[in-house]
Image (cartoon, rainbow, N blue to C red; front, side):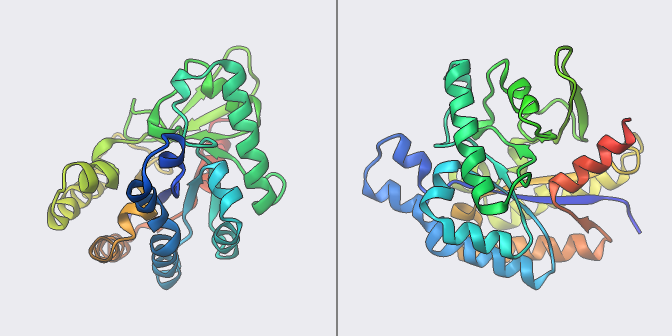
Length: 260
């Protein structure tokens, strides 16, 4: 039995990206696919395989579609923060960042309950120099936006008491650039993700509890018919290899306990 942990994470943006950019109706409808079809397919797949996942959600999305958020929570998935209207945080002032973070936190906790939001992922994986300090001050225990390693690591800031677990991301572990930007074939995507999963199992420099396969997915992307079939094929492969699937907050708590 391998000790690898799989965190399936979904960026639930809906049409927040298109609304912020004032895009036209066809582009807006592409984001709405997540709400109308993609999310329900993903939730059904996760339920079929008895997997708990993490949904990084924009505050605007939670306000616009509270019924879908309630459905996510009812299946015992985790809700985490993903900006309010999918902002570029590296372009915001400290005041603007705080406003977006607080509005998002309030919207998500209204759905999930007090203390339910523990993590953050920056839209576009773009951070200002002080964004991570701000979320640590809010009591968040993890982020998933950086690329400095291929295993989780702990960040600590000199003027803040709390620690922050970083779950690194990568472009080749994100469905959007592979499918939407490069139009990569499903067989090639499967081989890329399988190769990384297999390699992480074999790496001898990763201690127990830190061997985490972190996959970034979008209901607006992976919810399409042929892509959801690919995701199920990958899930079945990883389950057969003995992987344990977990919500990101649960892994972060375990890592923080080790780091005391």
